[in-house]
Length: 117
Image 1 (cartoon, rainbow, N blue to C red):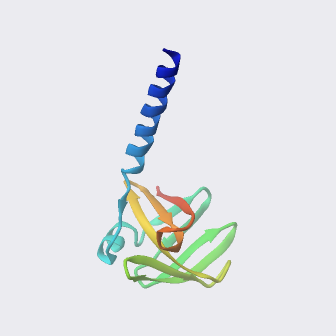
Image 2: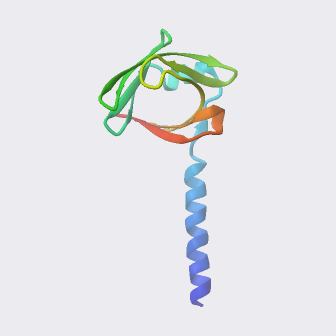
Image 3: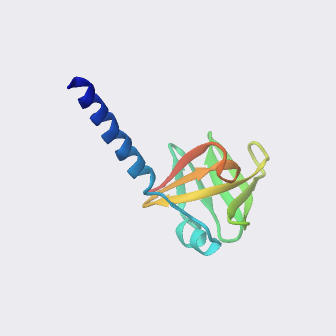
C-alpha cells in the first residue's frame, strides 16, 4: 500500500514536471523572435540584456556593461559578445508567457531562463 502510494505520488510529480516543460514553445523564425523578444529588457536575477532591432545587444551582467551583435541564422539566434568572454554562440529560444528558456550550442548546451518584467 505504501509502496503504491509512493509510486503514484512520484508518477504524478513526473507528469506535472513533464506538462510544465511542454508549456514552452520553440521560436523557429526571425519574425517570431522579433515580435516576442526584440526590444524587451530580459532579466536573470539582477542582470539584464536588451536585444535590439538594429542587431546590437546591450545590458549589464556581473556589474559590467554587456555589448555585442546578433543575427538570426539557420533557425537560431546567434550572438557575438564584444565584452565579457568575447565569444560567439548560436542559441535555441523557447517562450512561455514572460519567460524565455535559452539553450546554448543550438539546443545542445546549458540552459537558462530570462524573464521580462
